Length: 489
Image (cartoon, rainbow, N blue to C red; front, side):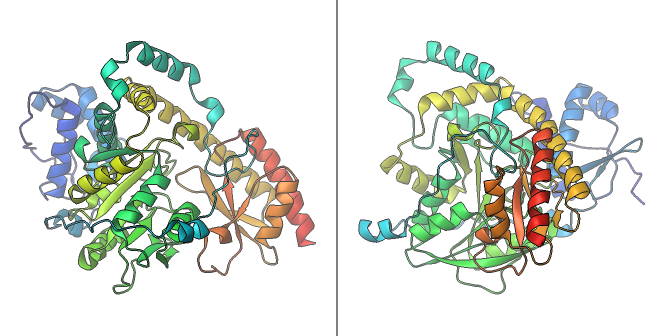
């Protein structure tokens, strides 16, 4: 049974310039992590807490909701708000340790060798999205008129000084907005000074590989995993160590496999869709600390969760500076924006800034300023909330149609988050043959095997559901059903 004791909360003093909701959120999180609020303890009612600290009830409710999203609190209808019982003691007693030093950057291989290793990632085909296109948001629902108004105003008011550009890590007001957003929505601990604005995760992987791994070195990645990461590692001439995935996400490598860094997608595993459990996250962080291994956490579509309790980002649990947090606005807004970010450990800030100063210099200053205004004026968060509802409806439509028309041929996984899922094929069906037939029928499915370094021993398909309407998804399921029935004989 949960504890019914309501503690007298003694919270840290609030500085005059700190937003009330953020102070309360940080103070409660600190009390939980410090062990003063134990798992299962009921918090004071929002009205009582507001009265005690001279806050509005809305401020308290906002803080409670943010901490619930991070997994620290859980609300029970008619019973109050409690500290989550799933937080293990290991999380509450993690020991601080100084950050390690970054590995110096090394020279890349000669151009001729590099050109033989690099592989083109095909560009997006210029046709309307169709079922079951992966890695694409509903671009037709993006509020382009609102974006245009923000962009037009920014163009009219752009200071001439900004026309000279900005620092290699990006436009500082945007870095501040990203740091605030990540701290609030994902529990990421990073000051604006440790945020780097890049074109996206592909650039981040290329840059970090050059900085942290010597040519011929070893990196770990999930199996199956993101193909774009594999292409970067191949081009940079590093050996790849496939790490198996199970129901709790990427497994913790056995022993010390001599890898310099590991790339992973704990929030929504690409492509299988599960979220890494909290116990697994803590075990992985301890392994990374013990083996002095960098972890690159790609939180690529963490904004879209439809069921289950969200877990805090791996980076937010890190107390040793081993996690590099990467994200992109491509799937939240639109792919053509080409803006993403890194939340860096302190040891990597200067190396990343130096590397960017030699290559990209900085992302487009106009795009950065428009995105900054779009975020700080609240348009970004409103768009995310709206699309979360849209994508949940589309996932439901896909799952319902699949249960009705694909039973026995394709088992579609109803994921808790993200823009795509997987379907496991019945015996005797070949994923590549299905994908070829589907393409000829005007729908897109992708074999799971294409994301594997080592065979899984199971045939499956990657299925996107975000880019098209529920009606289009149902029509796609009908066509896929016809194809599977025909191929099954």
